[in-house]
Length: 98
Image (cartoon, rainbow, N blue to C red; front, side):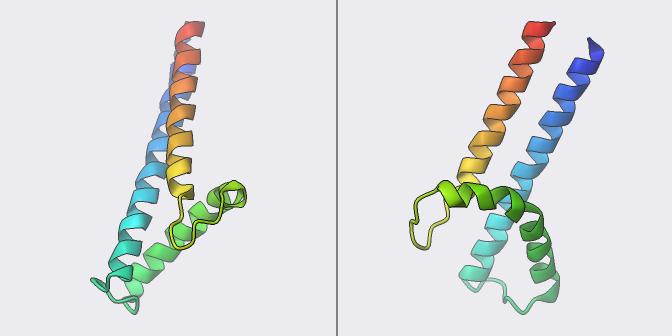
């Protein structure tokens, strides 16, 4: 039974980490867009590209199904909602199995 709760905790930590990365990517993108930080800042650009390389394989399938809204990309919001739903469903399933 403990192993089920361990699996739930691991899934919860991974989903929280992904949500934090999405938020960090969004904030850095805003800093670049509004010229608060120059895109020539090599450290921040490398950090942004690393996060993008991690998240793009997850976001790409969502973007294929989303309608084209122009400059606004809603796929990160859809991913955050999906991760929260996944986390809640796994937690409820483990509670019902216990």
